[in-house]
Amino acid sequence: MGINPLFQEDFFLTIQDRYHSVENIQTHPFYIVAIKGTVYINLIPLNASFLPQQLQSLQVAYQQQGILLVHLWEDVWISKREQVLSRIHSFCGQNKSLHGRKAKVVEVDAADAKSFLETHHLQGYIKTKYNFGLVFGDELAAVGCFAASRPMKSKGENYKSAELVRFATKAGITIVGGLGKLVKHFLQQVEVNDIMTYADRDWSLGKGYDKLGFHFSGTTGPVIFYADAKTMNRYQPHRLQKKILTAFDEQNILNLNDFLTQNGFLKVFNTGNLKYHLYTNVG
Image 1 (cartoon, rainbow, N blue to C red):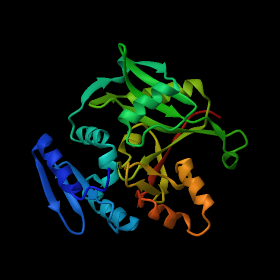
Image 2: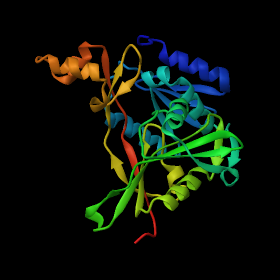
Image 3: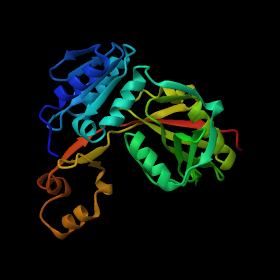
Image 4: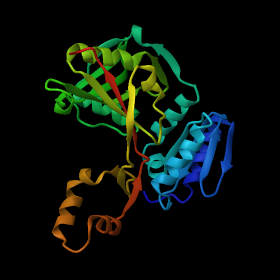
């Protein structure tokens, strides 16, 4: 699979076929599509030359008008089309609502967590210590993944923190109180002083965490990725495939960026993350 020169048209026609109320509101220098007058998507081709600061400023300008602007890169649309469409479906208020109080919390093994997240989460699976799910009847409808607790000496001698790494629901479903139920269950299993998590600024304003009582604690800078032009999978530099890193180590001429460029990788980025903490009553 190569770079799709008709990426923006492909997205527009796909969304128009689903929602009809779709408008192309800007074409230069940004290509922005408004869906149902509610969701605004900035479509970014892989050959774009924007700086992270330009995209951050654009998003802030929309946020000041009370509008969520999503930055959608070409490689994400091509490699994660169904997950993208699921998020947009949710943003447009089209999901079926279920009540978390009616769900049963279960432990989820790594294989099932991986399968669920690769299907339903834009960033896919990452190994974590604790995986819990919400089940309705026999159906796994949501998965939340937490890292092991770790000491934070800077906050106190016995202070411990854990990270909420992933949360996803099945496509087409919103579980009211679902994430809160999984967080509560985790805190019953593991004693920590806080839970930390991130919201991807390309896709979120963090409002869901605000509602759960998380406290906004700052932003992180843009993250650099390399997108494989053949598969459209993206990798952080330290998570590149072993064969690529081995080939890089075996040559002694090019730096990593130039080596990857010559081997069919394209440099992309996100606009950083919003960082949140939920403080417990422990200690």
